Amino acid sequence: GQQLNQSPQSMFIQEGEDVSMNCTSSSIFNTWLWYKQDPGEGPVLLIALYKAGELTSNGRLTAQFGITRKDSFLNISASIPSDVGIYFCAGRGTSYGKLTFGQGTILTVHP
Amino acid sequence: GAGVSQSPSNKVTEKGKDVELRCDPISGHTALYWYRQSLGQGLEFLIYFQGNSAPDKSGLPSDRFSAERTGGSVSTLTIQRTQQEDSAVYLCASSLVGGSVPDTQYFGPGTRLTVL
Image (cartoon, rainbow over all chains, first blue to last red; front, top):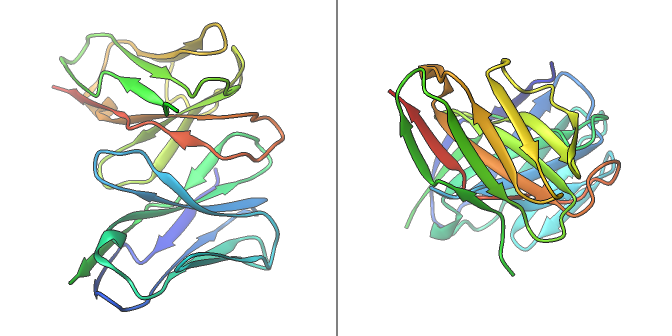
């Protein structure tokens, strides 16, 4: 089945630093999504990407849908303590409804 | 408005017992999804409902797992004869349209299942 490889697995950064994480896939996806999950909560959608090459921003977050449709990255600029959490990439292929998730990146921000 | 709710929030059961997990989607959402999240892992798709029918149940790990949805609203995920490897957080999500529309899936807080 489809697999998503997300890296890095974890990051420890100082407040104010920029962060970058990425996902690669063995298969093509039609939609790439980035979610954030806080402890005890379900994931919350941060950014959705629908076209190859698309670059989208949401405040301090920027994400891109790779040209090959097999990868995506998420950047967070000027990190703040509330950015702490687990970030997941997810892809939607031709099987509508089903999302395939990466393993997650655990982000820790030191004040 | 209310988001996706799930009950119970935590469930501890003994190996071999059956469990039922409930999901109440956002009112008016046609599509409903179940995922499983094992410790330190990403989410694993289980099943997708469009209305009361399940066009994609490819993620159900074995025939011990089943799900139903009634009235186009509430869904129940049932695990029979639970095993220790079933221990995980079970997450439900709903979206307004689903199907061929890549709309946003809104997640509930999950049910943490522990099988002793």
